[in-house]
Amino acid sequence: MAIREKYQEIFGSAPEVVAQAPGRVNLIGEHIDYTDGFVLPFAISDVTTVAIGRRDDGKYSIVSMQRPQHKVVVDSLTPLSGEMWARYVLGTIWSLGVEGGFNVLIDGRVPVGAGLSSSAALECSVAVALNDLLGLGKSREDLARVTQRAENDYVGMPCGIMDQSVSLMGHQGSALLLDCRDLSTKDIPFDVASAGLELLIIDTQAHHALVDGGYAERRASCEKAVEVLGITSLRDISVEDYVARKAELDPVTYIRGFHAVTEMKRVIDTVEALAKDDFETVGRLLNESHRSLRDDYTVSCQELDEAVDTARAMGAMGARMVGGGFGGSAIALAKSTLIPTIKEGITQSFSARGFKAPRFFTSLPSEGAHVL
Ligand code: GLA
Image 1 (cartoon, rainbow, N blue to C red):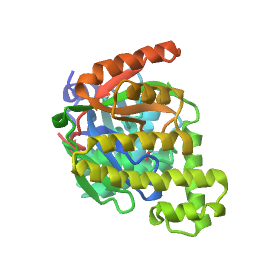
Image 2 (image 1 turned 180 degrees about the horizontal axis):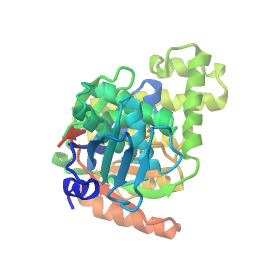
Image 3 (image 1 turned 135 degrees about the vertical axis):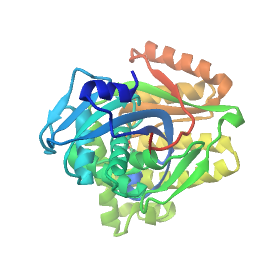
Image 4 (image 1 turned 45 degrees about the vertical axis):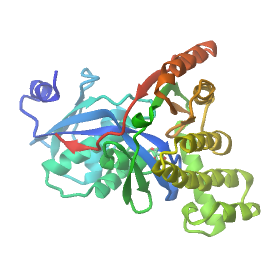
């Protein structure tokens, strides 16, 4: 059933606003959004749609079409310890600083737990809907900061600003070059199809417990490197200068910072290669990014490495893990004609190693969040 009709059925009136926001994949620029880096994600075609209406009793009633039996009704925006998906909604309302109660119906079509930012899609759909409904006049940059704050301070995940920004500011046909320092953006045309290529998304279906602690710990290492080196951010030091100052850092801090400074350079190199339709170089940079995330930043896992190695062995031009790591998805850039073989190869190798069966997606760069 369509979301407007479902809302009417559940809440007994028509919604006042309906908005949608997409998930994302990150082409390159991993774990550098929280160190002021440039990143190059794009919005995917899977979206979360929300229908919202005001209530006059000050309560918040949240229902997901995917879990209709778990209606969440609360009296206030005090951080919840319960249903995670409801916390993204309440956190966004809290972070927007708006008054009053709301009915919220969610139709979440971004695969959950696949590292495709279903949480950012939910936050951004709510933010865009309420910005419109309440005439808040907030810019996309404001909404990116609002939704990041919801996740950092309400949900308690110390994420950077990439996922929310691309969900809000991505455009069809382009990857988004996002400067995480000032949130300025540039659309970078990403037309793999005309080159006979496809970007395969491989959801390993692995979720390792390290996720939260491991993420925060790496972020802390980058902050430590900045402090010890007395620089403003890892963005402000070249790879050469960073390497020259190796002796000033303990080995773990050094190698994590090394990932950040080299990944920043790989993003710029990828943008240059895309301008020339040089997909061979893009593939090589994806491979280098994975090596760095696996060996230097140590955020990969067996399943991600297997997916990446198999994709490459079956002819992909490049492959790497995406997102926070320790599970979730990888991407592989390959000739479209090779995609079925690559999928088959990965499915077989996962089965041989006793891993959960992977899921595959593909997506062209799609439009960011908007009111419907
Ligand atoms: C998660 C976070 C992002 C970003 C990536 C790694 O997706 O939410 O802010 O740090 O990990 O690039």
